[in-house]
Length: 306
Image (cartoon, rainbow, N blue to C red):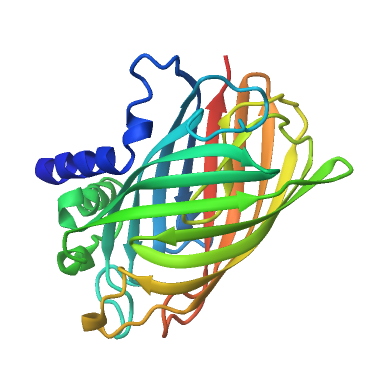
């Protein structure tokens, strides 16, 4: 496991050399933190498919003027997280179900304004397989909470390291006190896909924040805090992706990825003094041929501003 992590860190440094070099005498400072927890027990209550993930983001930069800078590399997000992908039954899955995968991801994203478009460019690594340690953590958690042991982890996807490139562009449009933001996204690496969608936020929106996007659900979470308001804020979103290739469905397994995926999401963000809580729900369409139905994930974020 240590060898895998060290190899991943070295490769990430090569992929993101300008970003990794930023702390050395360039006047960068930590601007904010973000995190998001996803789990299907917070959604439809099942333990299957995109069953759980946790992401932590640290945002650094030369400063934040309540809007994205005009040049790249002035604001950089460093992101690390893990996720569990599982068949519908952790002990004896039905024929044609997807294979178990423990997944770690590590990357860097830069955010900037390009001719009125909010732009994100990123590079990183995704590690899959038993050496990530994710399946071992899964087993430990299930043992602690007396949940069914994930027997299927014994036949999980083998160790593999994927370099990943990704990007997103979006244009926020003011609709009175609400904001509509169409966006387009591309990803190349563990999965090759193109995605287009829209986000709608309304209510007591947090103005002047930097919003980051979760990979699994598409839910947006705050990376740099803006002006807070004790009243609740609401979000709605939808997107559709065209999937060209996926490393989570090897040809030898005989399970093929769906060529089209859709996501529908909603969330509410509330603040009370220094405390803030976000809860969202996301419907994910079928991700592989033969998947009998979609699933619903719940997302949770707690934060404290001092």
